[in-house]
Amino acid sequence: MRPRVFIWYGHHLFAKVMAPVLRREGMEVIGMATDSSAAVPAILAAHPDVVVTDRIVEREYPLGIAEIIRGSARVRVLVLDLIEDEMRIYDGVGQGAAKLTSIIRAIEDAVERPGLPMAG
Figure (cartoon, rainbow, N blue to C red):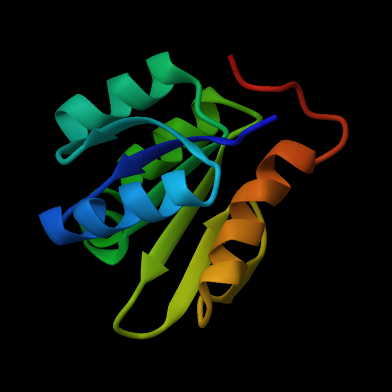
């Protein structure tokens, strides 16, 4: 099963780069949005496995991230900070984002977590 990914971005370049990379890696990008008033309802309606976002969103919309996590037991929110070279995973652990493989693995892990219902 391909992971269903929603990209919530604060900087347009982030989405322009992430969408084709994730598609190339076999992910299904089911939506993209920029501001919380549109992003949060769209994410909750789309039921993604993973929301990939950037540090701008994390800094400016922490309550939006919290609402997404409360709205779905399954969703995993990955916050990529490409300047600081780190990745925070909202559902538990954090890890480095030094390589594309670590980002892809974190997304794939979202659909492989046992005991949680699949999105959709």
